[in-house]
Amino acid sequence: MQGEEFDLEQMEQETEEMLKVRFLTEKNATFSRTEGGFVSLTVGEEVYSRVHVVRMFPFTDPQHYISIRTPEERSKEIGIIEDIGKLNKDTRSMLEEQMNLRYFTPIIQKIISIKEEYGYAYFDVLTDRGACRFTIHMGGSSIIHLSDTRILISDIDENRFEIPDVDQLTAGERKKLDLFL
Image (cartoon, rainbow, N blue to C red):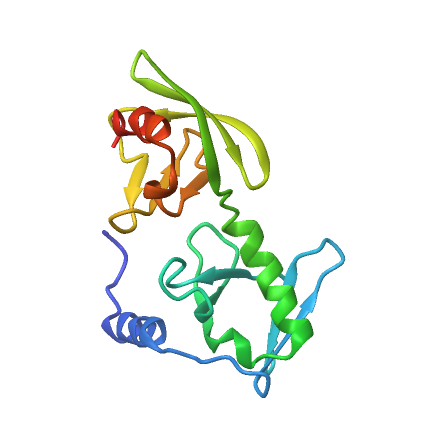
């Protein structure tokens, strides 16, 4: 850092900005759809031509605490919607559409087969969105237990699949899956 001065005051100001929580409501924020189908946001004088809509608690409380962020890789939080149900129907629908795209998670209804080969597991399943085949890494964190009976499976392409209740699977399906749990 030769030649550069450390500015403690600037760092403290940036830290304070990062720690501020701004709640977004219909009174202080206006969401609109862009021509490309994305969502833009206006908060006071600030205009964000595109924002990301992120659930802070996607599995335990999907309707509350929705984070609105800038779209960059190192995104910054613009604000939080405390309860999406308090927004008008059009805004709520627009934001839910964005979250449905982000959190697209087909529900596995039937396990047709699971084959293991060279450190990978090849799933052939029937989901609520139709038949699907996907691959997971065997040794990684591809299977996450959300509860005693609910699991989330992430494939090698980072697509997610859910089994809401493994106890609802047939004995044969559970036997196939038990090898990987």
